[in-house]
Image (cartoon, helix red, strand yellow):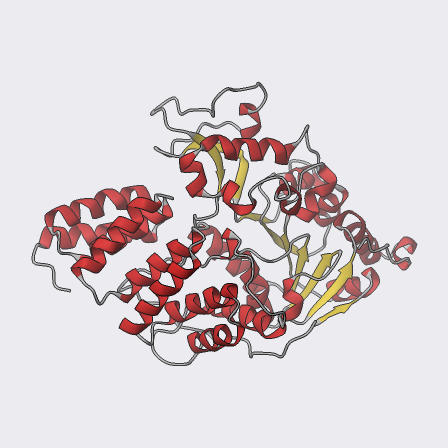
Length: 466
């Protein structure tokens, strides 16, 4: 849509650039000025809605997206975004209505096809969901970004193998809130892995067999989840959600309503402390040819394990903390950092959540909450490591949260071997060829490193705790 006001156009472009750089609060300021100067600028309203959504400001996001549609009723991406907001709030029927409207306006809109497929699967319409997921992968202009394409392939395979009738629970982490920026060129799509049939595709191996694979690798990358930190006394996500309102308790939307809930969940997660690296952390720190660790954990224990094993002087491989860290806190409002770990605010009982000394806004750990996006810089670093590895070790994670769950698909598409160390196969086993070493991380990882060293103890297979 043409914009008559050059200043508004310039402000919009600046706001869009800030959005791409993960500077959402600054983007809001620029885009707000743009729509004041040019109230009819539908795309500026749309991007302002995206910025508000990324900040967890759902009502403001809905208002701007609806205004964008009023200014341009043909703006299909705005319908898709409103559908995504409805889905993350549990409004499945409303979400389906918005996705249908988006596809009526633009039948080839791949993001809407994908979101419609996910929504239909939760609603219990399996065959229709499969059809929409397949349609989102059809060749042609406007292809999905490569990482999302890998995700869709995995979700499609999951849908093909899930024959149970009826609706599915809708956890917040499964709602596809995608950040689609208008007029941004998507990267050239690389070949996606072929679709496969249903059924388990993991092959169970012993630590000795897995060690043979590792011994032939020139570069090993680890992808870790909460299961590796159980031995350090930290609660797993599964354990927390038995006591809390699942993902909603750690969503940016809930934090804006009641910051105290997040701090209570963190206190529950940490338990009594302090927390030292577990045997799994220490064993992984000894892994030969380890080029890096991509972790969903926020506890800093991989770094502590490296210091314990190698001392302070030996440089450690890259640790990409996709979901941030509890070792730093920041203001949710002004983003100023405190230089203090989250634990320092939990040492004494508090009647209210801690507040920022600069602006009075609520303080929070420097972690990624549900509804926020993983830093594009961190994700790029993770993908670059995945593209370099011969073997990807997946340790202690259910692989049900994007974008971390997409990384093994990228690794397999590039020919890497994926080895899972877990008590039972994760969701990866439905759609990827993987090797599974069953058992707990604190048992399996030491056995694996022992086998690599050729210790006699490695000849015994560790027990599997189902």
